[in-house]
Image 1 (cartoon, rainbow, N blue to C red):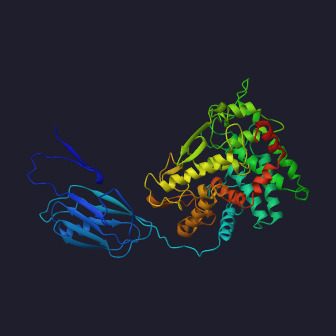
Image 2 (image 1 turned 90 degrees about the horizontal axis):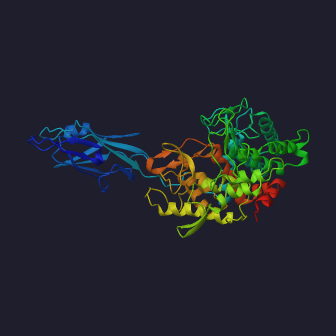
Image 3 (image 1 turned 30 degrees about the horizontal axis):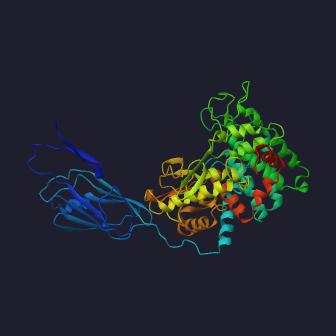
Length: 536
């Protein structure tokens, strides 16, 4: 049997030839700035010294055409030869936070004309530029700037015919129900802060309400995505072409907040307060107990006019859906009893875990993406207790555990620190995923830390300053921060998503004034829900 060996770090394999009389010309070692041979070098200097040791002395002319550094703005390489070693330096500095590739091709030869036996690729990612990208301003001025710039996503970049929020900055006429609900709350904050004229804000609310009144509805529920020009459902997935109850709950949270903000003079001639109430009262929450014919004591996320209950996703246990049960329990037309919440969200007590992470007790669930402690609580003030936990404690501790995990940095990512933290659902270098301590690929998402301001004000402010001052040249765009970045992959998103931008504006406002919490909690339907569900 012919033995096989693999040069793992180089990703190449070859067969030993027992009859070969002379040893192969091969790589013995490679070091970059005295670091050992690696697939990828992170956080390297802009003028790295690359020392490559071969089994034989190298043909100098061959080396200069076969050892190549690929990447943006590449300058010529300087070569120094000594015995079996080649030292390579870029003539001019590389760019900050940029990926380069060092290639050693099989065309390389030794002085004795042996062929190189491998095809080597080593990735080199240079360090961050840690200088400030913008002038330093006061903390309050920085919060003002973030709210104002992020609000533009909903105010200036809205889908023009519907007034709704586009799913993301490349979505065209596809609008997002939940993201638009978050956007309504962000606009309330914008009016309150004098960023939007009140009359203009009311006109936008009226446009959105008019669109929702005529858009496709499925037992009162809207779909996840809607065509902003026609009001027709846009399928989110092959069988998800109908009702999305969780997205509908996020919209209902926004609508009730807007209604509580309005005065009678705001609605003269448009009956806006009553129209919002009618939209909420038309959502058939109880029907989503899958009454066929008896009703389950749990709510279901999806229903399709074509596929019925085929997705079969019960809202069971602890994740981002608590607001759905609250909205359902408060409905005067299609309400649910406490047993549905107890059996569904609470899993009859099985929701409780009480495990400790980083010396911090987490009453419910396990360390999660941070949108779990944000989406349901944009309007619903988490200073309440049910039979399972105190939700202020739950949300603060979940946020701190996310923070402590990034500080501990068990996977040794380059920039994770007390200033660079925040794991949640977002775009990442390979697509979209829900990053968390249990699913960490090195992607930091600004909305995670910034929407945690009410829970972790000091840690969130430190993160904001890092994102803005240190990363601002790559992360600060026309609608606030881009969605995410991954320093070890030399990747920064160019996307902005409604469902990530909205919580930034809203939760910073709740940190500063509790405005959205106070408005939403003043709704009589919310007070009814608290009574029905036994919240204290």
